[in-house]
Amino acid sequence: MNPATPPTDEMLTVRDMASLLRITTRAVHAQRSRGKLPNPIRIGRLVRWRRAEVERWLLEKQADADAQ
Image (cartoon, rainbow, N blue to C red; front, side, top):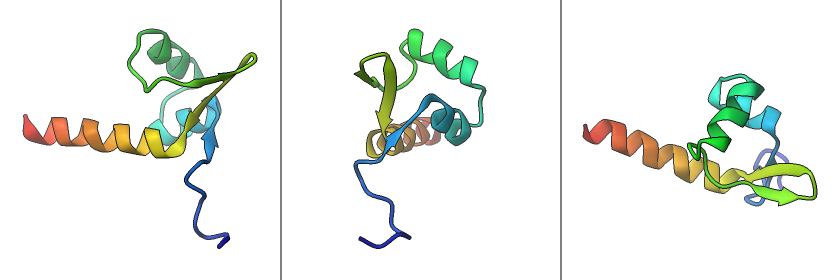
């Protein structure tokens, strides 16, 4: 595997999501509880998102904003 190419099944933490979306971790939790983010995967008490799903969701949001 090429280290420059991230794997498609990479899992994002709350901190990763906050960094990607440029919001606080508290805002990630709030947005998640309101259903404003893609559904995460629960692993015990851990919450993770698939990077590919998050990137697809961001592209959809961008397309919706561009259409308005």
